[in-house]
Image (cartoon, rainbow, N blue to C red; front, top):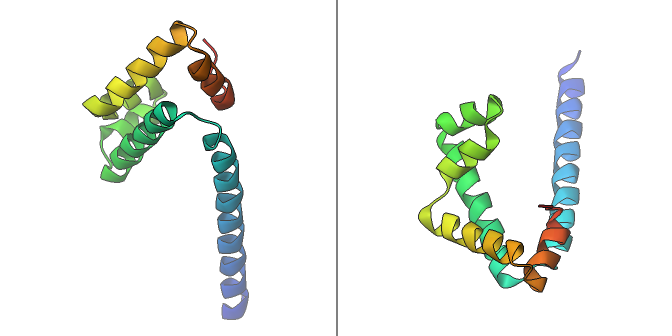
Length: 110
């Protein structure tokens, strides 16, 4: 395999990755546009905490790999994130219409 062939192959893999990221981002944006501010805050906070924990390379990554996703995410959450998620669940259980619609948009079923 020539150097040019290797460079071309690497470029194609990078292009495919960026295309997939772009498609995923568009799908997330479409869902996020439908969410109420409080649900969007909870989703963003959970995402931030999980990404921060993964980037730190903590034991949380091992928990997720072992199938303990719920436990790992709970450990990774800040107190603020836990409060936002608790409020979301409370509103969802109470049947609050906006939260129920948000849960449907996110594909969350109780």
